[in-house]
Image (cartoon, rainbow, N blue to C red; front, side, top):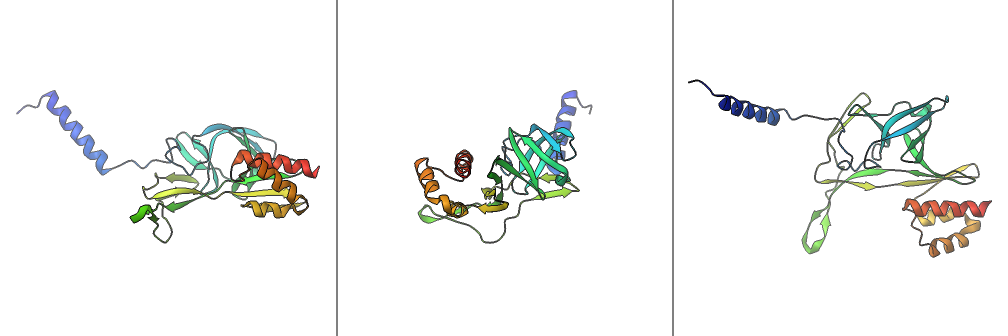
Length: 227
């Protein structure tokens, strides 16, 4: 029996569906980071990279907050930026980032007091609904399927039971020291001589140190006190 063009088209379509089902494509971290919440920004953007030897170059970048690595898009394949120790500053989304070991800290304010944000996140397991509207979480580490080949990052989408939880850390460079804080109380301990003024400012302006814009205001006020 002779097959018609229509019959051949149906056979090809069925074979294509079967092939896709049996051999699903494993992609690099491509697409938008709207589905990859471990990234700081919603998308990759053209950025300026200033090297310590004075060279300047451009790259399409975003920042992975879980792995704390600067990632660049190379023709649709996402790669971790190598040799961060050779980089002076990265200008990404009108913000400044400087290398600290393999990570990059955002320079929020650079003055007498320099303030940094260490953008961090961690994977955690979503709570399972229980009675009375409460949730419970399974103990133990959360695994996220991923694959790395050299410095190439290949990360699949997060499983349904995994979420990204912010865990930012904040730093101050002041009087030749580096001070770490994550709470208002820790911050105030850095400036015991100005604690009262800082408390009043934070209360009046309803400062939340976990909000970037509020932290910027607080840093500017701190610099006005130490001048």
